[in-house]
Length: 486
Image (tube, rainbow, N blue to C red; front, side, top):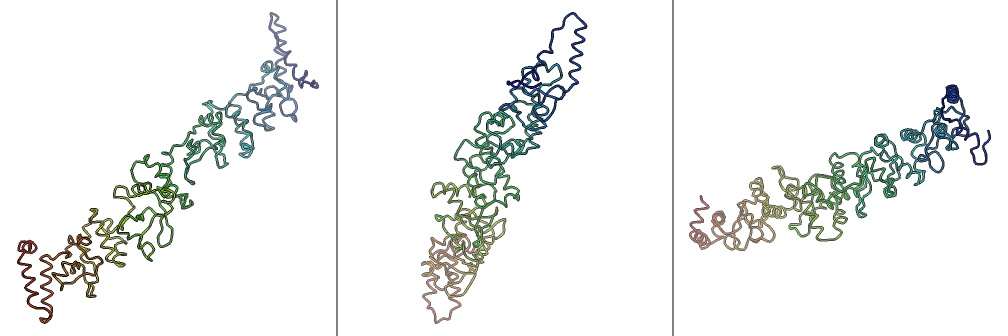
């Protein structure tokens, strides 16, 4: 029966006339039921697929108006259209229910959605309009019995243009803080901002378990990434590692410890850039001695110096921030960072000790002085410092313990003893060496050494007055003499 201009005609409206009120006539009631029963078995209805002929009522489902989009099936596939009752039957949908036409349920709609995605793929999802996505989101939101199945569909758009399942780990909405920036390569996936700003889609995504990321969560992800030294970390650029440290420093109040955590840092050593968690150095021009800066470019040096990009990006030339950053790196004294060379570690001398001992004894002693002043006093140094070989003023190399510092007092009072050739030979500079048994002042030990030195000289090279002067000095301090003998 051809359709009228309205598109319906008797072809689509005839089911309106099959209903009747039952009366007392058993004959007509049986006839009516027989007619309906026969109609259920016949191919009498059209689907939405125009290429398919008439079908049985039980093979078709009525699509509620709320499940449609722009007058079409929401998930437009030929196989899906063939299962949908033609929309022209809307005026007779109630009557057709008596013939076996089922109403499409939300669960049925999910099955169609899943089938559609499996066939058309992500590209077709991405090609749909914002209005279509809003429609889908509003339809499936809050149906708790479908939530886990919906979480398995690739319907979450990311800001990089890809689409993933909601069940994927570490999927979050972008932060509302425009200054917040998650370092590239951190295992966190950000939902497309445009989709996030749409209220219907955001509500749907939240229903699927997606929430806004927090800085604390990003910190945890950075720490997880650095903890296992995963292949993903090795693929990241040095700038990404710098960004990691910058993010952790910015949110340091959220960390458990008030110091830099154990992550990989980019360091420079012998002109090469390396990544390490082991001992590193910071160049601080306000700290003396500036041994690290002095020798950082010397071949064979052991100093792994923090890449200058950290301070450039984190501190941005602000002195206050630089001090805070250094304090954070240095921690509470047990940090992997230092501003002055570490000489002893785990009761063993470090490569820094060996390098400075070979390169410059004076600089090594200044480092010892710094550690002594800051109460980093290893028992290993008590024995090792006096054994250091130093060049003396007479050109001969001797153990430091057998030498003296050529202060003005010692040069005047004990001029014949062995003096180490050290710069700025004042008691202020080298007073700490007295704790290692090194002669700094003209004490009893120094005068006894002077007498010993005189006894080794020919008699014509000194007069008796020189010897008498030493003895008079010894006699003037008997208590000191007794104490030192004891």
